[in-house]
Image 1: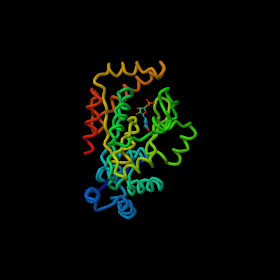
Image 2: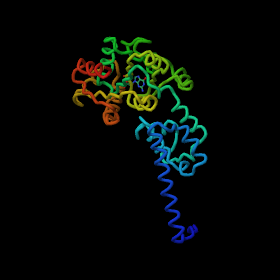
Image 3: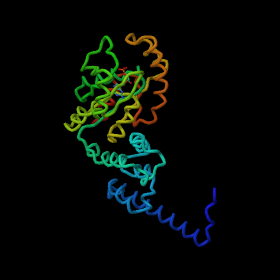
Image 4: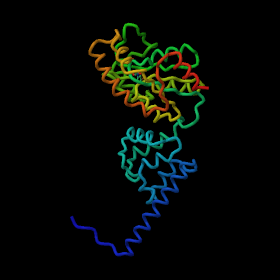
Length: 290
Ligand code: 5GP
């Protein structure tokens, strides 16, 4: 490969000066975005005529938006299939449209209700906590849709909306889920319309979902508070999962394996609560809404 022509000292100084000016320009625009004086829409517009802005990395732009940290920026880029090193000039039309929509959505407005997302390894007691919160009257608890078969003690429309694969795919395609994820061979999703209605009506909303889903919720609704429920000990979790008569042997083994992976994900959450006593956890969660 031919080497680029060597630069004279004057050319080199000019190139360095240009790079320094570009960095200053990018810092200036990022500060404007951070202070709320510039919208993402304006930055995207500006990039068509300003070379320094066109060369800004997409993650830098996203991270400069108030309420969007590294984690949320990363989740958004994954969702819109934007590669981690992509610059604004390299965004496709579809990706620009998605970013614009994302930051114009009512999710960025202040919703009167609080949204709590309860996650943690299977068997940690999330559904018991959720049931008590529902009974307390202080929370509207979302009912998820799933392709898993009902357990003997579960009711359709109460524990889950049990739907088949085809119907689940239709709802994904129609964008009816706030988030959805695969878990142990089945799909689970949170119907978005009911959640948004409850939040707009000023209700406190609780989602009891897996870790992957929690991550997605944060990327759609940054004001969501992510809570990770931890077992007091690993042994306690194993015994809870093993004693689950509603799952067969293979399923229990699979869930144990998953629980190990899930426990490693707690650092992503806003708050970690140890489930040593359900009443204490419930009290703590109610306290978070006042
Ligand atoms: P289970 O089959 O034991 O009821 O639930 C398995 C896992 O799926 C649990 O971790 C539960 O929190 C999670 N889950 C339940 N509903 C949803 C949902 O709507 N979305 C996601 N992402 N996970 C869910």
